[in-house]
Length: 80
Image 1: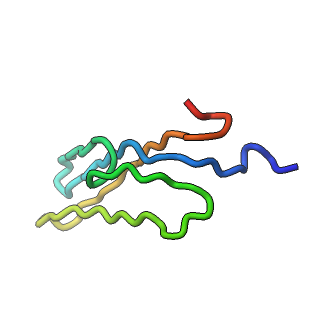
Image 2: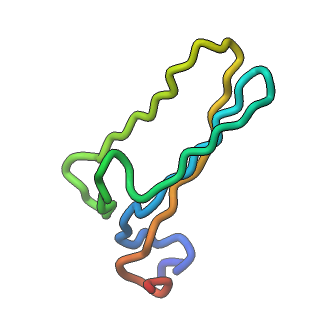
């Protein structure tokens, strides 16, 4: 019997958050719904993956970008 914690359940990307830290220590935060106007559904057996590439144009060397995505379960025990 499969371990329920290792199951993959259909989900949808709902939000993203980026912290852009420049070499001078200043941090710009970018946060919002979806990505580039999309709320992709992620599911087992997808024929084509959803590809998203974020960019951070800067003229400051040493800039670092980090962040996260938030997903909502569409099925399974953690579905809202």
